Length: 182
Image 1 (tube, rainbow, N blue to C red):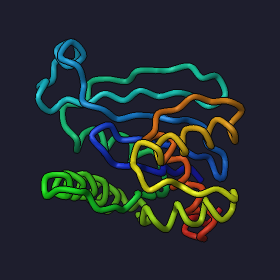
Image 2 (image 1 turned 60 degrees about the horizontal axis):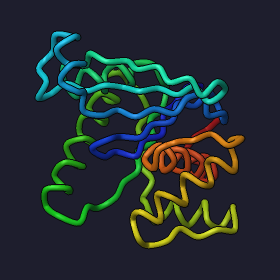
Image 3 (image 1 turned 180 degrees about the vertical axis):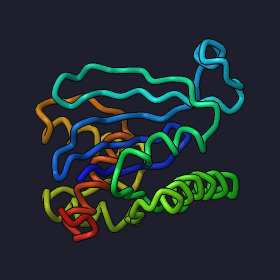
Image 4 (image 1 turned 120 degrees about the vertical axis):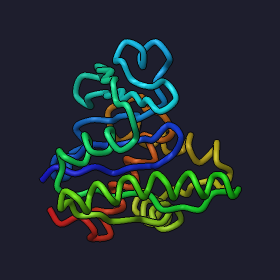
């Protein structure tokens, strides 16, 4: 079974799983102006996907998504299950943006018959913390760094972004919570 765990943000972290193995780490981010123009898409809405394969640490940029719906359609169309971190932002603007991203993802899953699950931030941090005998700091930057450090520790020194690290632990927690049936 192929599935994705996601930490939705302006630069969205993703981990692509094959059963219980993380095969790729990725970031879906706003495309640069040159990337958008090269792909002949509107720079204001364009997104780019950078993928790092876990075994080779080779980064493959995949650009050319003209809209969030196109990007999420591409990703969701290749998996059986999507697990998304569910959290609350610290401002009305952040909450609205997170809701919009979740809406894109959930609607793409619904349209394609892909299972959709959520894991609350505090829930995945507690489950992972208990399993790893570690705790996640309350401060955002320190919490992201904890995710990065623990991915490096558990994935042979692999270097990931904070959002990719969170997406990895969202996935691990989903398995430990029984949300992913392998």
